[in-house]
Length: 312
Image (cartoon, rainbow, N blue to C red; front, top):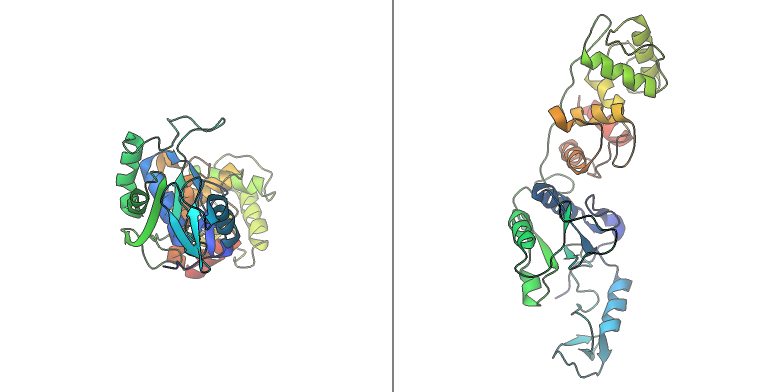
């Protein structure tokens, strides 16, 4: 049976395995499963273009050949027999082409993280594999198809089994943003220190980071606000200004103070607010983006900041 094929532009890159793409809801579910598991799960394949499907099929199957595996497929009216390698779907019917399947690594390569940080599937009885499957089941991922074709590495996504799937852009949970408290001239404390650090990074303030909101800090706020058309230039830092102060946060990018503000906006607290945009922060950004009704790409960019301001 044919599986609806996606284009890479209709999917999303995995946060947990950069360079691999899945359909948007499947990608969100996979990253969510990995985060809940607590370790990365290394993969060798995800979405495959039609051209890649053809290449793999022709590498493993030959027209009119006798298959030592007893595996025969019909493609374009011709019977093909598998002569080497693992089974492959007829091009155009692969769930890899639909962006709803992954292949997990079964052996480590040089440079791969150690077991404490990432796992591979070494056997059907692999404890890490069993533990991950229990977590992944709640996110819609199952190995039933892999078992049918005797591929311990093959997992498939089923949206109707995803307990967290919602009505947001990419499916999954949605989260309202956190409103950081308003500060103004005369305020003191950690929020003022955070603001001063961020304004210095933005080139809007050259004073000391003394956690005291004085006239120089107020001038820095107004300088920042003038650069953001959505903001009222009043020197007061309310939720809307905080939203723009967090703008630009993304995985792999520096800017500790901007990142800390972004983490607070998406609801992280305590030690989780560390100024580093990791998998948990990316998923929180996506949850807020789903609440906003915008593409959940996990990047706290201009579109996200503006949508936050529009929502109030």
